Image 1 (tube, one colour):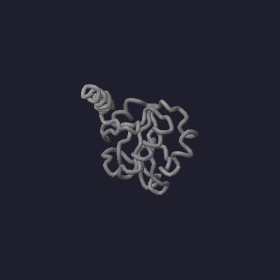
Image 2: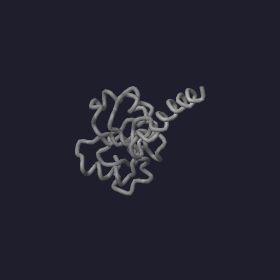
Image 3: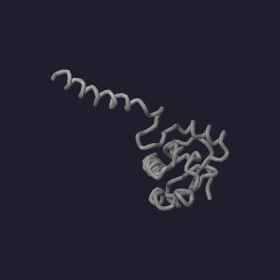
Image 4: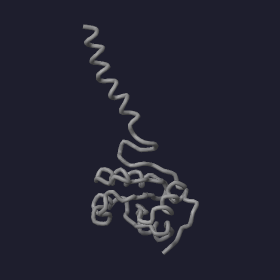
Length: 133
């Protein structure tokens, strides 16, 4: 009886423990990856067809944003992402002001089926060029 119980426990625990190591570096269970501002800048420079997604408000965007960024406020991601971002495999680099909204937006995008979402925090930590409208 003890062997059966041990086998059952092992059968449950081993897959759970193995699953913990399955996500890649900085990949969340939500289906997106968090990267640094430096890594995001490298991707922007290397991959011309990536989408830089700003999920702040229109006012915040107008005050200063990363060159080439597309505005999609976080509260509209679930409603407008599929029409604005039709290629669900395209690299999407997401940011906001401090990183909270970008994480939520990245999670929403992943839940909608986007497979190449990278979240890099907030523009307050962005050491590179910013433009205004």
